[in-house]
Length: 165
Image (cartoon, one colour):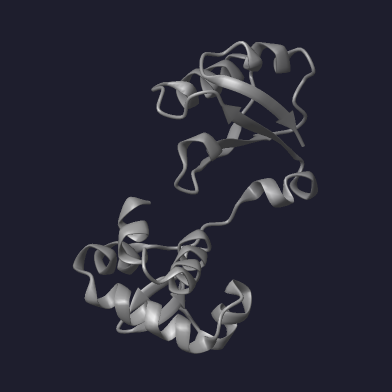
């Protein structure tokens, strides 16, 4: 995210803390870090980011002082990624690496194909850590994904690779 890179260009440790908060859906409200309705201690975030707790506090203050970042971080919320528990809930997961994440319609084409096969999509998440070349499309489907579907998904426009979990 360009706003984050600009704000923390001269403060790489704070940038690591802010990036970690963004990745985990930790919002900043009233100068404090929150994961949903659960307040997060600066020290806990610091341990996860590999920085001192004062670095986290400085990052939170900086976020609050930058109106654009404050608006973004005030609205962040965590979500459950079903891919991590797919097997336990009777689902399968497709992880798709895109050839060009800026290409429109990849999600629509792949999920359309899945639905035409009579499968139900439980969740679709695009994991984009800020670099388009690292984007992944994660699709959780009820039941088992039939083997014949994999080459069909691979042939969709914009798909570089497919992994089934």
